[in-house]
Image (cartoon, rainbow, N blue to C red; front, side, top):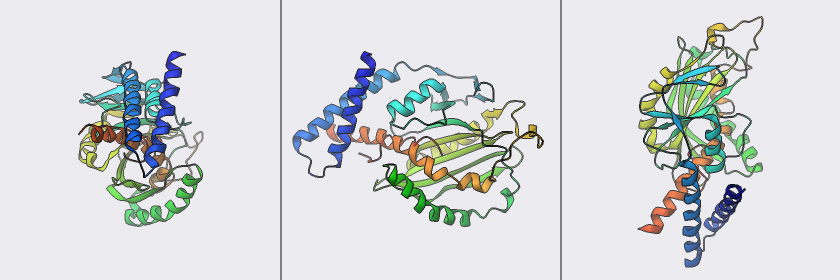
Amino acid sequence: METKVKFLLVLFMVCLFSQVRANDTLTVNSQLDEQAMLKLYLAYADSVVQTMNYETGTVRLGGGVATIEVPKGFKYLNPEQSEIVLVNLWGNPPDGDKSLGMLFLEDESPMTDSSFAINITYMQEGYVDDADAADIDYDELEKQMKTDEVAINEQRKEAGYSPIHFVGWATPPHYSSAEKKLYWAKELKFGDDPENTLNYNIRILGRKGYLELNAIGQMYVLDKVAAAVKPVLDGVNFNKGYRYADFNSNLDKVAAYGIGGLIAGKVLLKAGLLAKAGVLLAKFWKAIVLAIAGLSAGVKKFFNRGE
């Protein structure tokens, strides 16, 4: 109970902090209040981070649906503790697409600024037919996604979130037909944030759906994330019975979209949520640095949870 009360107190202060930041006429006293609230929040976050246990080596995902060989230089955080990071530390709303775990760089933690983490989920939406992969015009797809964002941002506005604008491909989509693995990266702008956000997406196709791995951070971590893509792609695979090659047309559901739809579909809407979390983290750290010598979107490091 004491821990719960402490969390609610800190959560209240974080909300108050957001309101104070929104006021353009900050007083000296309110600036001091910000520092005090940040100090309390970070003390709470640090106490949570200290309880986390990481794994390396071979890890089963989703009760045996897939397996990950944790790449060298990374560490794996289990689903339960990953949900604590996503919801309690980064401020994402609870999501029906529960995390299968997260990957962090071995020398970093959920509160490390200027970095990224990879969230893993399993989307059991059916077998994704990749017949359209070779014919996709990614320039045209980019234009369509920018058009679609108007309706998506209306939904975000109604839900109380700032708009997300798709700036363009940070890394154009690439699909390996042999491995059934896909990756691409988007540059996104959240509301009036001065710094754009990177949303790096990896998809691994399977018999009944796909594994979704999302890396989120600021644009300046693009090279670091890109360097991690190959070992992560190589290390994550569906187990026998769940592989793409195990598809049975007489038994299995086929998804309502192909590769193009997988990239364009709901990606911008969901990615926006997880990204909001990452922004908050960066915002807290920046405020501390300025106090000693905020991004305005929450712990944006990991947008509303996914796509």
